[in-house]
Length: 86
Image (cartoon, rainbow, N blue to C red; front, side, top):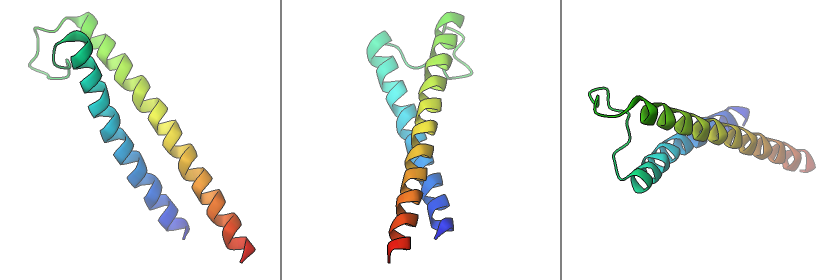
């Protein structure tokens, strides 16, 4: 069952990463009115906006990774406790 928890953690992390990236793109577009500056051909984007986007998206992804790791660990601990009771 430990392998199942690891797979659950990977799936949860991937899903959170996709949702986080979409959320950052959506908020960036609503805030600035421009598409996110992650295209390599987008030289019309200023360096300031590219750095700001990179910092924001990196921070969001780091927070999501910590939250998914903690959630998976809690689920594994809860499963282990219920397994010990039976």
